[in-house]
View 1 (cartoon, rainbow, N blue to C red):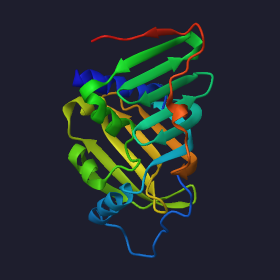
View 2 (tube, rainbow, N blue to C red):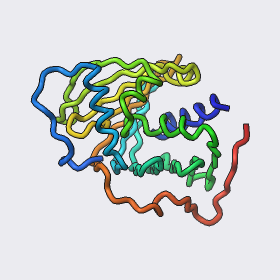
View 3 (tube, rainbow, N blue to C red):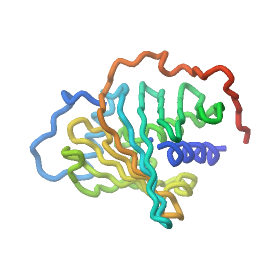
Length: 234
């Protein structure tokens, strides 16, 4: 059952994708970061995170045929709720609210509804990876290493590499890289490497706003009349 939930999340990430007023904590003039310092910083910053809004661009790279495809959309996060809306041509909505995950495909007039149950915490950790995630929590689920401090979007970042510890996650992703903006300690970019194929997805965030005012009604499931609801079993 747990493996199935990981598979659901892999479909969401690979098929669709997955801040901040710049008055957030200022980047400090300091020497190179150590991994220990970065994890402690993520721990301290996690307490102030309540939500975000951002534009998102996902690029899927299929290595064997050297193909790149890109989709764009928006993401809203409030607490443990998430709304991801991707634009045409592969329009899709992913809504995570409470114990339910919805995947709505307007072209098919269909919404898939998954009951998460006791796997809810695992789903939250995976879908919201890096957004307010404490450093200690990252270490529990991943072997974490510090890659460097590259510039991205003219911002100073800290790049971490995460290798999953749990086999069911490793079966989907061999590693995940995250670039954290030193101004606010939320991701500018995530790169997810699929196990076996070597294919990968780059998820890039812009126009980020941390802790914006988002109404709870944004996370209510509202589908057009005539939408078919299916509840996959397994």
